[in-house]
Length: 494
Image 1 (cartoon, one colour):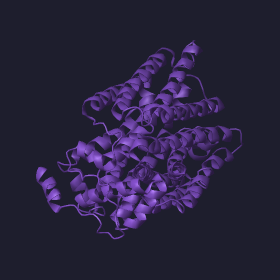
Image 2 (cartoon, rainbow, N blue to C red; image 1 turned 120 degrees about the vertical axis):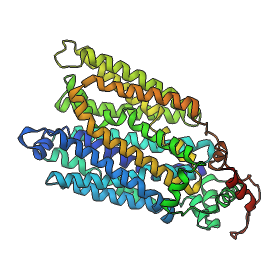
Image 3 (cartoon, one colour; image 1 turned 180 degrees about the horizontal axis):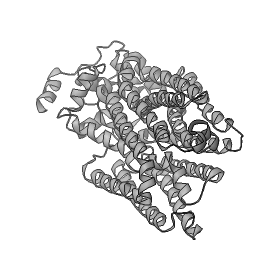
Image 4 (cartoon, rainbow, N blue to C red; image 1 turned 90 degrees about the vertical axis):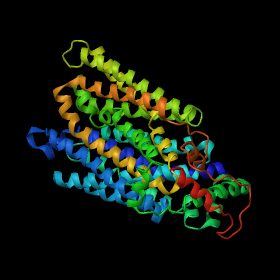
């Protein structure tokens, strides 16, 4: 019963992943509709600057949303923050659907980006804080799964829109961004607060009730609650610290390694090449002769490959493969996939190459790349960063990582159309280099976090960790005290 409840709660929260996946994916098919290009670009039906702006402003919104989500999550709770951000995506989607000029479309994409940037950090944190150590990879992996499902759904919705006539081709697909946020807002009424957030608010009995409901055993809940309270006490109860204080701490000697590691892992979601292929796949397909409805159909198949890969992750990889091994081997696999795709594109990467089989081979490698990314990274880039920080920095640290990801995304979305136009298949070499560099860094510098509680992971980075206790706690907030000397010792070690 407890297992069912945990999964049900996780699926409600993971709708935030679907929202991000759908909102990110729908722009690729939208930009591919001739009716959209005619409406916003005029008779030329092409405007590289505006296409880049529509994509990059979404990343700019993510950067803003990422910076604010940490404060909102700590002050108002992860649960309320997720609900509010779901509502904001509705506002953004409404503006996009009703857009009568490009400025309205860009504003709608920006607002949706703000909400999705927040959800990218809020959902993994909430899932990590409500899961047991031995299934945290699976639970946070549901976030990645829903991103893949959202993206795949967006591709097929866009393809379906291509069979309509006129503005309906892109307005109805954009309107399909509305139902899931509404459903998520309703679901957030029924899910519990994060037990760690409740403890930080001195709502200890509520936290214990939540842990009993989620994990099904009162003894286990008492044990976990004792460790949570002990660790929060060691952290000097600064969970509601201001952004200025959090930034100083994130880049202090004690926490800077965790901050840089989390930001690097999330940034690699962009520098792996996935976002470039996702947002500009229509350009890739056009270079090998696939245009119009055929291009949109290929996009739909591409999205399905991500879902297949994500299912493989949940069934085979999650909480079974070590985190470090998953990341470094995945980086090597992606580098190999892109290398093969680059070679095929160089040889057959044009509609008049005289070898359609070679062109289809390049597309097949993009499909395999999509499945491989889902297996190794789609979930893992959120699992590991959500584990690295102590409570008082967790939401703000992951928010900073999302900000860095979005900033890199802005740069890539601006330079990619230009790069593809000027250097073509050679642009792939950038992502070959970044993936191989990431593999080396993961192998030599990333500590293994699988199977440990969020409190125990701090010990990997040299923090003083509160000992677990089997003591049953009373109703009051004074049930367990940790000597302040332990906290002082921690400070002196920095």
